[in-house]
Image (cartoon, rainbow, N blue to C red; front, side):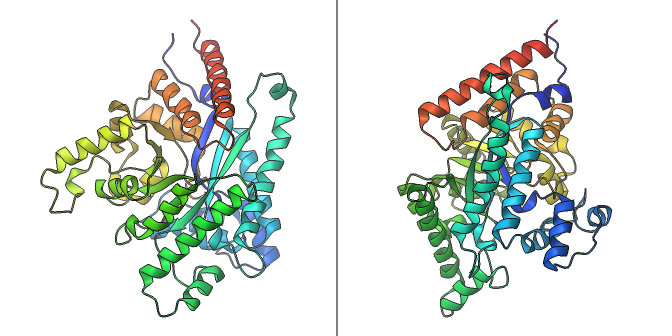
Amino acid sequence: MAQRITEEFVRSIPKTELHVHLDGSLRIPTLIELAKAGKVKLPSYTEDGLRKKVFKDFYKDLPDYLAGFAYTCAVMQNAENVERIAYEMAMDHIEEGVRYVEVRFAPQLHAHENFSMVDVVRAVTKGYERAQKEHNRKKEVKSGEDLPFHFGIIVCALRFFNEFMSPYYASISRVMAYAPRKQIIAAASMELARAAAVMRHEYGLPVVAFDLAGAEAGYPADDHKAAFQYAHSNFIRKTVHAGEAYGPESIFQAITDCYANRLGHGTWLFADDMIRNPAIENPKAYVHNLVEYIASQRICIEVCLTSNLQTLPHMKSIAKHPLRKMLDHNLSISICTDNRLMSNTTVTNEIMLAVKHLNLTPKELRNVVIAGFKRSFFFGDYTEKRAYVRLALNRYDRLEKEFFKQ
């Protein structure tokens, strides 16, 4: 079998996207149109201008990368806009062969007096369902030649916020005016966990998981332990941004305090030199045991190559990314975009970066792609998920035989 993986092949295979932020994945023309209609001030009202000033190929640091979210969130304050953005995002995924998406966002950033967190999630659901119906009614899907499109929603608690980030956060801060900041943040996470359980179990919305996002350093995951316990007790899966800007201890905390089923990024999993706890006498052994636990429990790591390179400048190049080491340790990996707009990327592009710079082999590619389906938080029963994974496997194997035939 030929060993060269082409972009044509990668685009054709069924793929997943397990780590992608809604507010980081708008189409620029849509952002400009909605900003004009809503009188939202932008640094530029042309695509080229926004690419130069905000949504760049290179960022100086994480705050520079995050600056664009102020503009995207500003146009996501009503149901019509959010539904449109969700629909377009789903269609962009479908166009490049992605057949399963778990879209994540913090509904707290869009909620206000006339637009509740439930309204936000309903709007996203409507947008994705519209794209789903359009794709799934195609004759190729009905004949079994192509995979149906499915999706789930992940709601994100934030490690840190202030009253200026949204009306919702302003109201919580006002009500808890005399509470320590950590207690306010923990209370907001707990309220989101409660809302997630209601949305999933009472309203039937496709909320498949609870996430924790935001700066790791100085904002430990155990501040949110009660919220994750609540999600865990209500049969909601958990994924945690961990090991992106902090070391192995953050990943350990995500697993032990937050019951993480998956890990967002996990970039510094192997960085024993980043361990700060003096009680850990043998950092190398600690990391070894942590890696072995993650591997044996098949805790999937959602890897985002371009995003990591942009927010961690000292990484220097994709070739320095620990994805190769993760693969060599037989970890369960899914390659994702993080933010399609901020990182100007697609799932296809991210996979091709791994092929070109980290020597991803055809066997490894198959494992990574299928892991995305297997480790998904599929909104349906286990029998339905197994059947869907089998469809993906069969489709992948047919295409592999066709593209790699002698």
